[in-house]
Image (cartoon, rainbow, N blue to C red):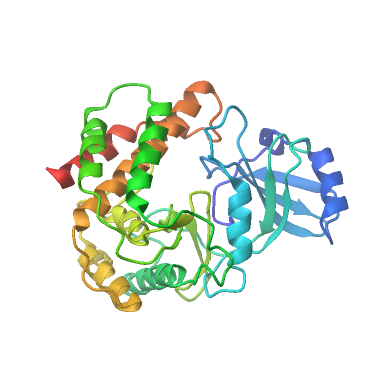
Length: 349
């Protein structure tokens, strides 16, 4: 995971890691690793805390489960390790993984190490850091990367059992409804409307199961420093087998999210003036790359994406109230739940 562009905390003591114990462990279990070790926590990573390790033998990234009580099946860093290992020899750009530690005694939770990928991370889909004439090429690279991910033969990659086949959206609606209920802190009317509407509108899975990233958005991508090329996809915690249109719609949410907020979007902005493609262009490029027909019932996929993100935000809010969130911005994330649900409700009314 690259993280050169992500804001970091300044004090290694904020990491809550036993640095001496971690150093001794890695010297015994990771070839070429040598201390002394300096640890810096990345400010991003609401769900699984992530750290930059500077050691005499090189730079690494450590990703761990958060502390505190965890929801069942959540924060599965061992699944992240597995999928990154499986994608190492495919066209999908990912960081290299080096080691998975399942001994919770080392730092208090499961963790894994991966390569530190140098590059650029963009938080704003308007890409203000990029010249206008180049922005369309960046978006084209994003869509090409997503299509390449969904074209991976999961059986050849050894991921044929990475998730259950069939009824993807039916299962996902059930999962995220349960996750939302488990973390619920107040009744939110638009969420209740979505919980009623989504199961009734659920489409049949017409496509073969693909590897779905689950959190495919622009700030989970590292770009090469010069050409508009995706160098690595980050944050695979929510990956599974399922309907690839879930990833496409989730990415397209950025066009509908407000331009100010914890997650920056492009709502109300002049995309033609920015040089950013419209939603129908993104969808058309994706379908062309994958040889797919036009997508029916597109509002369902978008509404589901907003509902799912709202459920995730509710989980972050609950952990923040319990004092277990991994970022000081967790309370801001929690404040997104109702606005996200309202954006989804607009799509179904």
